[in-house]
Amino acid sequence: MTWGQNEWLWLISIVLAVLISWFFGWKYGNRKRRLLFIWDAVQLMAETTRAKGALEVAYEGTPVRDPYMLQITVKNIGPVDITSSDFDDSRALDIILPRGYLTVVDITQAGVSARVSESPDRISIEPVLLRRGTLISFDVLVDGKPDVQLNSPLINTELNNTDAAARTLAVLDQGLIGVTTRPVETLVVSMSSVIERSSVFLSRLLFGSRR
Image 1 (cartoon, rainbow, N blue to C red):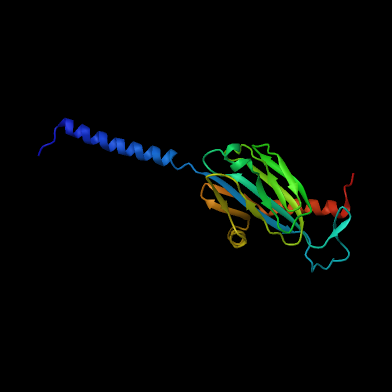
Image 2 (cartoon, one colour):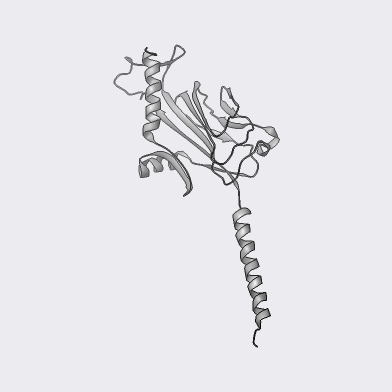
């Protein structure tokens, strides 16, 4: 059987149609929403320190027995925006601290201006447009080793997070506090940055503001 020009054109057209369908299905059909949730904590003063008794951290006049500076970050690492309508039933994104916390020291928002509410055991982010790459980060003072959980109402959104073991491996492998979910979906916070923030906050608690 000898194929003519029309048959070859017909075959090429089918192949091109299949390739085009595959390409657009791959490029646009798998654009999942993804939210990165990560937290790390630095102990401000070990209980076994030689200076125990001579130095102390206090919050609003009350001594903090085992102070930690906790940094919590949520970031849209997906290829599409997360809109306020993606919050199921307009419920907030709740960051839960079962053991409670003392105060939110600082809030950093990049590319977004979210409304945040606080209660004794949680920090809540109200429904908001989270564009690609935007993040919200909290510095939180806690008493005792913290535990952090995320209660997400986001619809059709993949949650990328890590447990303590994964964070420890990241520190050992890279010398950094961070998490890597995929090659292009990486959020890394340097240990020096966290320690620097903690040191500044600790000095303010111990010695107060000097002019």
